[in-house]
Image 1 (cartoon, rainbow, N blue to C red):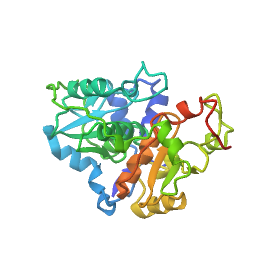
Image 2: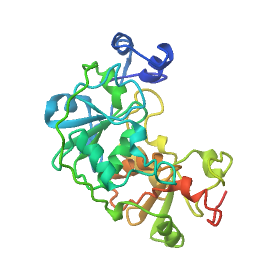
Image 3: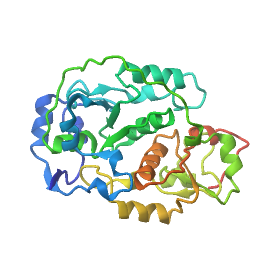
Amino acid sequence: MKKVITSITVLSALLIACNNDPSVEDIENTADNITEGDVVDASDYENGDLLVDTDWLEDQGEDVVVVDVRREGFESGHIPGAQLVEPGQLSDPDNPVDGVLPPEEGFQELMQSIGVSEDTTVVAYDDGDSLWASRLFYALELYGHEDVRILNGGFTAWLSDEKAISTEPAEAEEGNFTAELNPELQSSQEDVEANRDNESAMFLDARSEGEFSGEDVRAERGGHIPGASHLEWSDAVADDGVPYFKDADALEEQFAAAGADRDKTVIPYCQTNVRGAHSYFSLRLLGFDDIKPYEGSWAEYGNDPEADIEG
């Protein structure tokens, strides 16, 4: 049995109670009050090795590079030895399309600075349904790293399992990771246009229902790519308690209902391919191997006055 929360997540409760600056004592006191529940066995997924649990991670010691991808809270407490990558570091400020990943050189320098080498096992975590952990996961696979995983349930699971936390920054020896973009893992707007009438491809919109329908407009225009199916990214994780990924059967059923097929190229997208990257990870977990997220996503497509739109 694993411990889970019954309503809001541990980290949300902490940030509310402590004015966004929880202390180690606050974190430990909150962890003491978590109730119990179950967590899915990762071996049930076709690619279950992409998802690790807290016991596995605790046993690895210094054999892995653990990366904290939270927006805040690192200095107040994190997994011992973790390196910090802030979400803002995973976007290129010089790119006119909002949220696009840094180019090869910039991403390579960032990863090398936290100790990532060619043969490093990287484990990413956050405190928000593995959203930013998935973004880092996707970025590393896109740029050629072969061994990256996600901590199931993130920092919330770490706390719920009463694992040790640290406030000490971890030193890192510079790594030798070389970034080389794999074009088979990414779609451009040109690719989107080329696949609009391709029966061997499908678009998976990972945004909210309001964004998909065009009621919630976050670009010059609202709506969705014509023919796209909708499955909100967060449907892949438990909606109550520690945000563990749902079991393999539940994920398979959801993606199948949305039209995702292993015989097709699946093209996830959202606003800035953060939520799309989460869907990418969920599909990878299930064993899909032809997934090409649209990196520009709605930040690019919805701001193009010439693009065809539904909704």
